[in-house]
Image 1: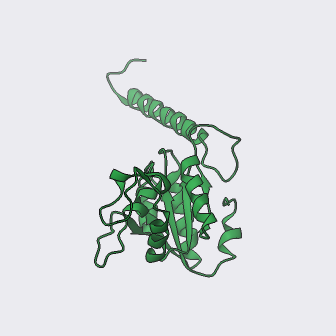
Image 2 (image 1 turned 30 degrees about the vertical axis):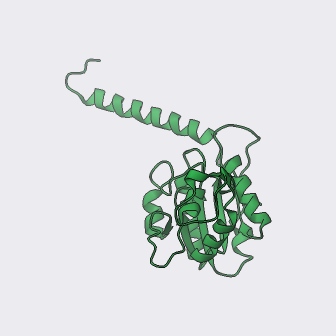
Image 3 (image 1 turned 90 degrees about the vertical axis):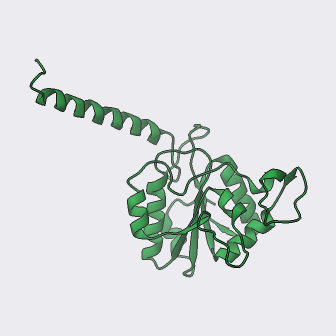
Length: 209
């Protein structure tokens, strides 16, 4: 399930809490995407929670009483996303953690019952989402991130996926954060640097010509 028009999604569910996470490689456009989702949702009466470090935030989240989960979840406000929207990358951070293929040494100490070399801790991820109070999850990522999002959708969770890629594996769509934004960002930055250097050169008394 992909989100092509937020009006289609936001207009069909009761008010609740939306969770946002970013996974995989870092690309330009992530912070503006988080900002756009958050502002629209908040103004429509939803609460918004950012999940830090991609799926890793849901892996490391602890349901224990008085646990400090500030490194895993962050309540989002317009002030927070407005500041972040002017910066590059993703302020929620990202990771390549896959809860369905979690190495034994990566399983958090507070989780028990996972002794295999590779573990599927999806049942605890779902419990963590319920504990946080998330009604709808919006993951932003590529194949690995969204394949696990599909797994959660199949388990009955409400998921709205936003595809993001740097690898050019398919035809771009209006709903994807496409690698061309990286190229355009590089071109704009180069042009701005050249313009700034040119202005400084013309303004310097030591510059001839």
